[in-house]
Length: 365
Image (cartoon, rainbow, N blue to C red):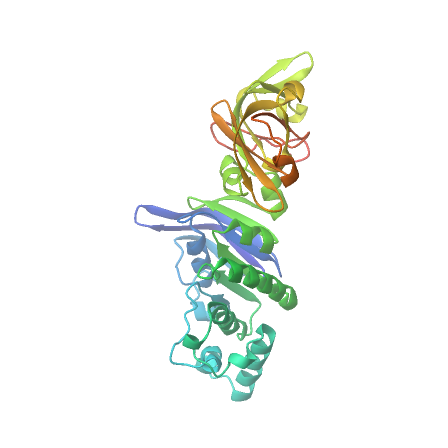
């Protein structure tokens, strides 16, 4: 297996600074997802790891060996592209074996690697077809197979599912995760789809404007976002964010926000003064009749409900802000026009209003 170390990676195209001092470690056998909006630098970073995009600063190490100046062919990686990049005139078998033939590998070894990959991906019946005769999902399997036939423990995926429809994306996502489990290899995977990131990754690198915003497990990125950008990018719908003011009294500090007074943990209260940004996930809000919940609840008007099958999203106008709560469908059928929203204890996140950076609690510091 391969360990990857990115140290102070920098890349710019004229005035465009595509990567800004990006550093993190990918451990042996991890499934790391590079996630962010279009133009955030995630594909540029993957291309730099592959050697397709030269660096202008920093180092890339594979198992403590500096590969920053090596050509792509010298890095011994398997790469899966967004466009599949299959040779239309070649049959599947030849598409799988072409890279190995260019390395002058023996025919017996080539046949062994192609047979192994075809069996693993269940594409053996497709070996004598051409790409034009394959479905989108089958083409993607072939593209993955072409990477797998290489004798490597590091695989790079550049938005491999973006050209598939929703049903196929779900099916291929499951297959890719199962494939990673079977191989035990190191996977680095680029996507703008947070569902792919949350379901596939052992760790997620959230990128924004060429910078690394947060690098952690999916659970931590979701529950304890490092910034308001991460909070608003991760989650469907994203975290509710509200401006609040910290007020101290004999009973401790509270955050005053839209008529509610929410207790602040002492560890956070000691770090802030005055204005603060408060965040709460939609599933952490309990919806009650207006007037319920006391001072620790928001009051607002229901704007719309969105049934999603297993649950329902309720959008509530609270002052100038629109908040979302996630509730069971049976509870949504009898909602009044005015409701109270009570955040669960310990479910609040706090951010600096200017920098947008998370204010860590005692357990996080």
